[in-house]
Structure formats: structure tokens, C-alpha cells
Length: 365
Ligand code: 5AD
Ligand code: FES
Image (cartoon, rainbow, N blue to C red):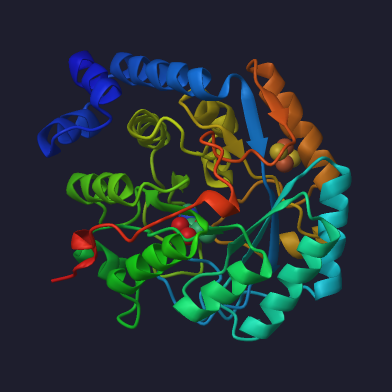
């Protein structure tokens, strides 16, 4: 098994069979070895720096009904809210003072925030904080909408693909949502020039080793700047309320595999990982992750943006959260840095030239 790990480190990829063996292996010793190799690669590229992204959860309205998600439209228990442009700018102000230089605007797919409204908000933020990177995470939109957001100044876009296995995708989502469109969105975003992030949940219902292998192949093909993975955590008011949460060890294993596949990638130790284990984010960093995304949302709305149960940090002010995070990182020998943390290859808006790569993976039979 160690040979397979060294092969992954050397070739940045494995055969399906080798991936299967590695994913299904249950030895702690092998997991530790893999985590250590990934941490070494991460250290070579990023040293002991951990990048922070300030997450602003600006709306929990959503027109979608994904079976796993706590803010799905059918959850009538969710108390809905939207931040005003002014409130969003206040969050940025707080975040800026705390050292954040990347803001992530995340929300459900909320028709209230039309392209025009989003463009206005993007321009206001970029105008007030020209030295900051702005990331959007607002789901599926048209090519033209994405283009308008990019032209308004947005730099990055996070859209988890959720699973690269068609059959699995349709067990996680209602039939109006398709993997094909999801992937089209990701390629559109890339073509426009966004730094793109994809990702998936570990241990989501009906996930198999095969679906994880599809995820790894898709990630390799898309070659995104960022990959967000975290354990599935059930939410009590969703159809998946009785499913088990994803495993800590499998999440740590996949973080390491992704680090070895894409040494430069931005890889967050997610809030979901911190939710299933009180040291989850620290363990994630030690397995090769290099980003954390503390919450900058106003305290009174945090308990309303619940994608899953028992979410951490919902009672803390941004300042408390960042201090806590700094201490946590320090305790494992890492240090939070406050620059934009652009990709190591020095990618800037002007020198990106993405062609749309092979679309073979986007075909759903
Ligand atoms: N458990 C873990 N992650 C979830 N997400 C949504 N619901 C859950 C859940 N129950 C993730 C999805 C989405 C991201 C914003 O949060 O992957 O893309
Ligand atoms: Fe948010 Fe500790 S990181 S309170």
C-alpha cells in the first residue's frame, strides 16, 4: 500500500484499481503514512502558512431541494433571512479589520439576488476593498450571469460538483438538477477566467468507492484551484436525516489523496470536518489542507444558515472565531496568513488563458 501512495506522489494519479485499494484500506498506519506524505508536499509548496477566507452567508433562501441540505426549499422549519448590501459591506469591514483579504459570499440559490443586484454588490465590495479577492458561492447560473459577475470584479467561484457519478447525483438531488449542468457551470466559470473550486461530501448517502473514484478523476480533469471536501452530516429536517455522517478518517484520507494529486491546490479544512470532530480542522491541516474559512456572518443570522446539524462557530463573533482559529493553528505549528493567498503559480486576472478541456466527463448517460 505504501508503494501505491509513493506512486501517487510521483505520478499525481493512480489507476482505478489502485485508488480502490487505497480508499478501501482500513489500516491506521497506512492512513498516517499517507497524511504525512501529503503534509510534506503541502509544506514544500506552502510552508506552514494557512490561508483564511472570510465566509459571509448572505441568504439562506434557496429554490433548490437537495435531499441533504438543511436550507432546501421544502424545509419549512428553516427561518429564512437575507442580508442587505449594507450588512454585507459591514461584514467585509469587520473582516478587513481582522486581517481577511478574501471574502466569500455564499448563499442559497435565491432569485431575489438578480444578476443586477449581485453585480452592484460585487462592485461595491471591490470598490471599497480593491486589494481583496472576492469569491462567490451562489450555485448554478447562466454563462452570461457568471460573465457579468466576473466583469464586475469577482475573482473566484466555488461550486461543489457534489458527486461526479451520474446515478449518485440523481439520488442526492431532485430530477430538475443534473450533473451535466453542474459540470457545464464549472467549465463555463473556468473559461470565463474565474479561479474555480469544486468538491464533494464524503460519506453522502449512496456514495460508493466507485463514485469517489469518479470524483477524483473529475477533479484531476477539471484541475481546479480549490477543492472543498467535508463529511456529510445529517440535518434533522431533510430526507437524509437518518443516514450516518461521513467518516473522519475517510475525509482525512481523501484530503491527502487530493493534496498528492494536485500539490498546489487550495484545500480547506472545512467547518463540517470541525463539526464531526472537535479537532477536525487541525487534523485536516495535518493531512494536507491549507485553508480555513471562518465565518464573518453577523451573529444573529448564523444559527439560521444550518446546512447540517450541530454546526460549530454559530455562537461566536468573527473576532472570537479568528482568534480561536489562530490559536488552533499555532497549537499544531501552523500560522494563519492574511494575504490573498493566490495560487502559487502567480495566476492573475490578466494571465489566465483557460481553454475548455475535454468534456468527456460531463456526458451523463
Ligand atoms: N452535510 C455536509 N455538507 C453539506 N453541504 C450541504 N449540506 C450538507 C450536509 N448535510 C455542503 C454541500 C454544499 C456546501 C455549501 O455544503 O456540499 O455544496
Ligand atoms: Fe470559530 Fe473556534 S474557530 S470559534
